[in-house]
Length: 395
Image (cartoon, rainbow, N blue to C red; front, side, top):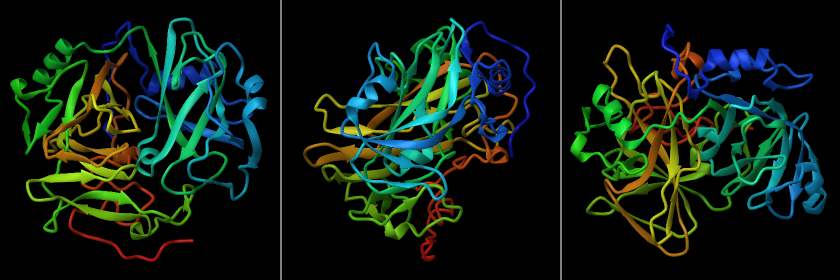
């Protein structure tokens, strides 16, 4: 269940918690025009952003630079799709742009950061925000006033989307809330951020370099040696607005480790794997998973980024963190990965104050205590390891 928090200490710099997001909506800092913003879309440290009424099929991705997005769009638009009713099908490998329902009128000292929702990344749908006058994806400048536009690129499966669906999240912050490596070590000493086999990772064993590194678990999730899943070629359409889960076997094939707890990644295939360590985000912090690219450039991990306060956290101390799902893709050549190999890292930010409610099942959080990598759209995705569903796919 969600844990109700008493909030006492407030910092001058930090990420806005849910109660401050409520206030930002009430003051018009975040606005959706004629649409209301559902309370359910307000997470402990982020806000779910919703697709608008139409998608534009693009011939290429772009950044607007000094211009408004609408002024640039005419050069790159190929077609429009109506997202009302049953929505529209987005094809793999094709970029689409959707104006979101939410708009911003940020104060001068407030800035934003966007990331795909975890479930979005787990089905290999690449998304990123652009803004009017924006020169970087997913970053909203201090004092920005204007609309938000989401680029959507399905990479493994064709997907059906519709108006109102939330694929991305927005995090707002004041000042520079990011923790230094020294502060991360202090936070870990006070409340362990990473555990392995139920025990806090020793300070001397932590890999810290502008963030806290996580390693792969390739020891096997069950007796078959399965360590994750790989997206199937030529999979059927995945409806991201469906109310019933579908059969994962239509979309995923299991991946098993080799002797020595190794795995060779095939080029351009999309893999879902798990972290070796469990993660615990205390109420006073928020985290973001960032991709790690080896010097060779042969590997990319993790599209989905935000970890809200309370992920893997249990105030009673009986639960020792949650493992992180990792979205992994090799680039041009087969690439060998090994158990425990560092593949991504967590960066941490201070909260302005503890959120009123923590990440957890009580607010509909899908991945607290997760032991499987599959997203919420698949039948059996949250069953204990070792069980498997063969339910027929839903229409």
